[in-house]
Every structure is written in structure tokens, then in C-alpha cells.
Length: 97
Image 1 (cartoon, rainbow, N blue to C red):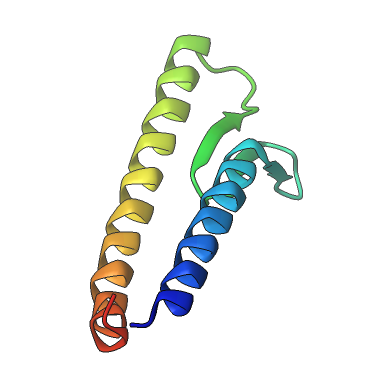
Image 2: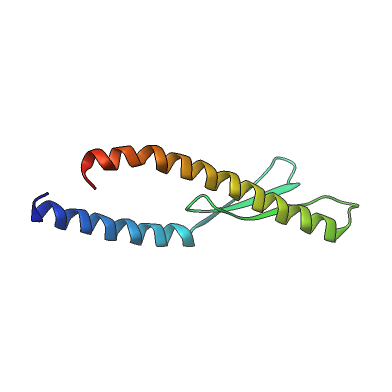
């Protein structure tokens, strides 16, 4: 790889890091139609919070369920990202990166 291309690669890498930092600070919240479920996701697709608005239930039980849902969904997303990265790794090898 010639030096000019290498410089461009480093610039792109730095820009990507800056974008990732901004994405981590960005959040989006979506409620279901009945407003019983609220999910907040950051720009890196990590679930930051799940809120359940269920009446007549123990608040500690609801909080535990919210935390378990958040953790389980984030683990599933992480597995999916690792799988995608493994598949994309072959492209990086082709590019000599």
C-alpha cells in the first residue's frame, strides 16, 4: 500500500472513531402502541433501557424483568455483531488491511 493510501486509511479510521463516539451519545426511544413497553437504544444499537408500564405488578419484579430483557437482548445483538464482523473480516483480508 502506498503512503498516500495509508494516510487516507488512518484518516478514515479517525473519522470512524469520532462517529462512533457521537453514536454512543445518541439515543432513540420507541414505545409500543399501548405505551406498556418503552425501549431506548443508543446509536451503536445497544439497548440502554427497557421500561414496562404494567399495572398491578410488584415494582421489584418489573425492574428485574426490565433489566433481564435489556441484558438478554444486548447479548443477542453482540452475538450477531460478532458473526457479522467475522464475515466482514474476509473482506478486510482481501483489501490487505
